[in-house]
Length: 113
Length: 113
Image (tube, one colour):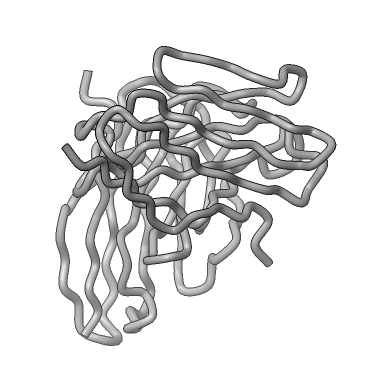
C-alpha cells in the first residue's frame, strides 16, 4: 500500500528550465509534507517543507504547491541548474501515532547544460 | 558537529550471518529511525525510537532488531541475513518527536550473497 505516490520516475530538463515533480497522498491525517534531495552516495537532506494551512511555500528557486482538496503537492524548481541533478523524494507524516516519514518512490532529475 | 554517523559504509554478508549496523548522533535528538532504500521504492521505515529505552516497529521490521540504550546510539541488528535484505540502509534523527527536519546519515550499502 503506497500512501504517497510520486511522479515522474525520471526527468530531464535543460539548464534554465522548470522542473516539476508531483506527489499525491491518501491519508488525510498527514500534516507535514517535506521534500528531500539526495545526491549519489549521500543520505537525503531536507530541501523544503510545507504544512497544509498554506497553499504555497517558496525558498529561493524551490517552491512547493499544495492542494489540500486534491490531496496533491508538487515541487517546482525554477531556473534549473546542473547542480540540481539529484534524486528528489516527497514525503508525508502526521503529528500523532508513528510520526515517521512516508516517502514517495523518488524522481531522478537530470539537468542538462 | 558530526551529525548522524553510520558505520560501516559498505558490507558484504553471507546468507545466515548476523551483523550490527551502527548509528550515532551528537545532536541530542530524541527521535531516531532506520530506513532501507531500494530502487523504485523510496525509503521504507524499519524501526524507530522516540527516546532512550523506547522502540517500535515500522513498515518492514521482519528480520531486524533494534535497541536504544542511550540517546546517542541506535544500532540495527540483522539476525540472519537473507538476500532480500540487500539494500542501502539509512539512519535518521530528529530533534523532537513532532514533525521536524530529519537528519540522515550517509548510509550503509549491504550486500547479502
